[in-house]
Amino acid sequence: MIEIRNLTKKFGRFTAIDNLSFTVVEGEVLGFLGPNGAGKSTTMKVITGFLSASGGTVIVDGYDISKNPIEVKSLIGYLPEGAPCYGDMTTLEFLKFIARIRGYRGEEIAKRVQHVVDEVELQSVCQQTIETLSKGFRRRVGLAQAIMHDPKVLILDEPTDGLDPNQKHHVRELIKSLARDKIVIISTHILEEVTAVCSRAIIIAEGRIVADGTPAELESRSKYHHAVTVRLTDEYDLAKDLSGLAAVSAVEKDRSEELSYTILAAGNTPIFARVSEIAQSKNWPITEFHVSRGRLEDVFRSVTQAQGGE
Amino acid sequence: MDNLGIIFKRELLSYFATPLAYIFIVIFLIMNGIFTFELGGFYLRGQADLLPFFGFHPWLYLFMVPAIAMTLWADERKTGTIELLLTLPINLRDAVLAKFLAAWVLIGIALMLTFPIWATVNYLGDPDNGVILAAYLGSWFMAGGFLAIGSCMSASTKNSVISFILTVSICFLFVVMGSPILLEAFPAWMPQFLVDAFSAMGFLTHFDSISKGVLDIRDILFFGVFIAAWLVASAVVIEIKKAN
Image (cartoon, rainbow over all chains, first blue to last red; front, side, top):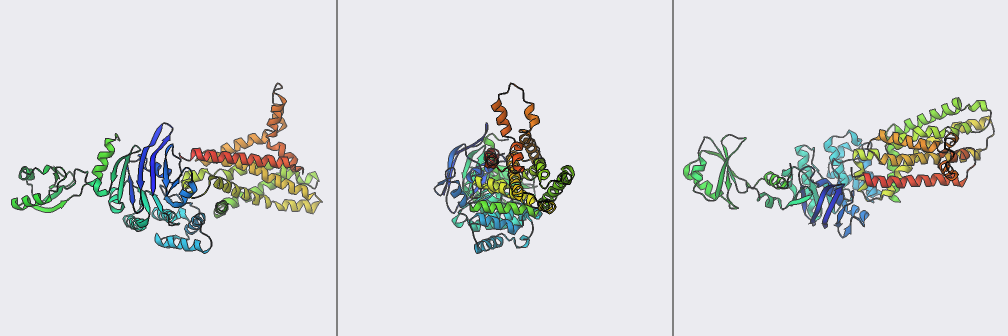
């Protein structure tokens, strides 16, 4: 379990993290969201013991990072932002170095290295120096390094940044498969990633938590929650047909797509059944019809901008 | 202690993974040759000792050691690997010491490879090899002093060129501190103990006697304490500067 209590980090006069408190338990995959400069990376740097806090505490499995840094660091696997690695080493040398530092000796070293190489599929680049690797491979080397000691806590700062869609998918699958008995914290600004891998999301802005919940809970805060999107073959006045329906708050025309409309639900009630009934009885010229769970992007924007962001 | 060894090994091997170590060693040997035989008048002196060889070492180190030291921490900060290194379960103390030792051993290897000069003087005459050994040891310790300054300067910036220039400047200061030219330049009203203290901090004060074969434990102790102090300063600087 990770307990973060009243964590504050100041750089001179600038407050990067402002009295942050939350708890993460085993099995949770926590997505850390926020605009650039919101304090995501700084929070991760404090949890991993790279930076020391200006106030508050981080407790991992009963160990306080400021009092027992070595114990905490042994529990954590960390992929820093940009996945820095020693460029002049080969992948294999680098991973062996990490295995040794993580306390493996003798035959275990080769065994552990082989295990992580298989896990993130690095076989083809084992003998290459890291500086010659592509961005995707470099990130995977960073990931391999982080899971070397099968850590209880995995902290990944933008793990899929710069990867192609296949690699992203692979990394997400990996994170999900690792997550069962671990604590995983990932920071990202790719919102689809949160719905894809996270069981919980925290949105921070200006160093403070502005939203905390499961991705579904956050989505339900969106004004598009339960909204119905229809695409028509011909112009048709939907608003007239729907004017009698109290559960519908508004009809929006999509800006990007022709003849596409979004019918917003008032309050938190599903409107799909009612709208579909009307559509059938009035014979709307429909080609597509679907219900939205809510748009995380929309929630993200509303909570982070309410905080007085740009 | 384990971790110290692991990081030390990684650092030392990384010097040899790139051309850096080889270039350093080759240039070091060439420069030593030029200094000793051309400028030092090794043959003309007609004496079986290595005074001209060691006499130039402070000036040689002045540029060679900062070149090795400049990347020690600056590169770690520039590439972000410092974040990786310092979130591994290791002490900062071990990391600072391991990096220093790796670079120090590299200089030691370069120094040992000057053995042909030692062989030459033994072939030509009958030198006091004890004196020569003492001078080698003293020279290596002095190089450690330069390197420790470099470690601290390298920790203070992400830019290795700045780190190089800072290190050369500060090393220069410590080299000339004990030299007679500088001491004579002090105004007469300066209390004697200050002048003494100043000259006692100079590298030349300590190295001159070592290179003549007087291996005073106090001189070695001076360099030992000097190295320790600058390494502690390195750790402090890393702690302060790692955030940006």
